[in-house]
Image 1 (cartoon, rainbow, N blue to C red):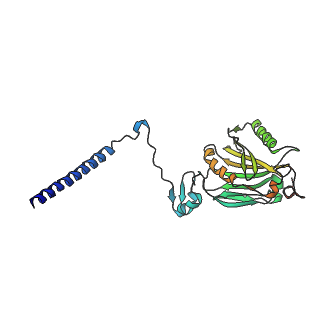
Image 2 (tube, rainbow, N blue to C red):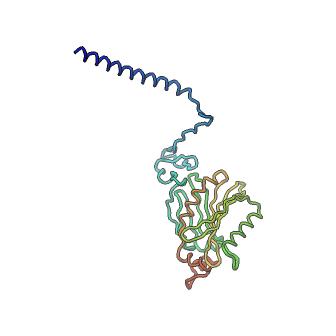
Image 3 (tube, helix red, strand yellow):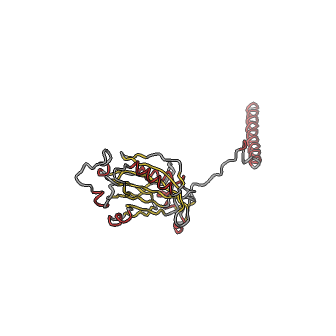
Length: 265
């Protein structure tokens, strides 16, 4: 019995010692936590930024993708995916030019009838709501000169813009998607309203004598933030069989050219 009592006392002493050590360690950590440097090793620690500020439903008009303020009901539609852009929600079918493309939520898209296309060459345009990096886009059917290739047309357009004094960005990487080739360049210039806007230009073949020009418009501050969204949209491009039929030798493989007939080009 005496031996058991000694063992219990020894065990109790060990437990008490452990508890005292834990308490002392916590007190030391709690004290030094407030003295810790915000820049260990000379490098400031980044602030922890919450993913999104959740807005009440009644404040939907104040939603801003750039400021990361989104109503909870719109998170699934507007929240950034791992590629740095929101999901594409709407499928747009351009029958006049024979292609399909997808747009994100908030892109108010208009497809124009043939009569309007004949006037100003605009096939599709969209204005973006909810303060997104892309502000608007426009797809047009432009004339190529006789015998002019898409590469030559893109170079001529580039030279004309350069002569007008625009500032170009360095990236001119071509883009290929689903057997279709786009020439590409980017620039910034002051618009008629005095605001400076930036442009992502993608140019592909459209029929025997036209060029499909896809223009994504942003601002200098948001130009790079717009890039993932631009690449995602242009990456969703699907050319129709009529469009693809011109790519090998520049001539149609069918008896009629519906695209040129409808656009009047």
